[in-house]
Length: 219
Image 1 (cartoon, rainbow, N blue to C red):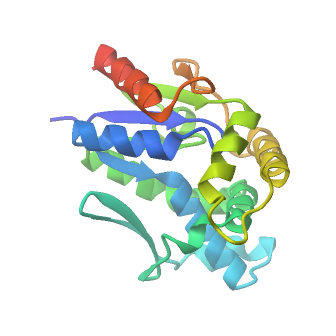
Image 2: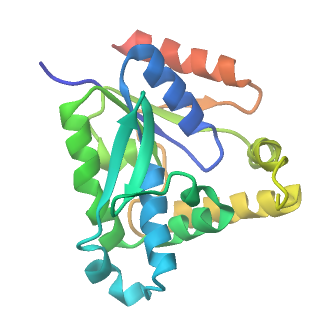
């Protein structure tokens, strides 16, 4: 029996991870956060001060793996749980930069496709519907205005003592959008057969319900 693959792409801060995770749980699918894989690679590169020219050799023997514990995805780097360490703004920007390198993408591409071949998945990222799962059963391009995405991110970080300002978060989002859309390898773009969902004026529950409705119509 063939598996069902659902691809959700979109810019940083559009709510992909939260909505994909919620929807996967409701459908009984596995949620695959590809961004976490790129963040783990970026963390390794940053911690070891690896220059760009050495990415390919450096990542060849690095073990980046996903484990699902009580339905929650955890990301492991050489056996170390780095699920929390990869969620800083610095690692986010580093992941956007380093994911443009073919050696980094190639290292993670096979793992992502293997998971999709073996499981019913909802996979989110920047190039899932265009590159990783071009034959996905459902493709969704999830987006929101930069201002709304910055507002959500600021609210998420506001309780932390080192929370950046709203203006800093907005500038980072705009910069990351540019990096993701203009990189030479697998840039962020909507697949031709993807459905666009703009969540600027939707709350989390409304966004998730809209996604479920689209999936239900196509499967």
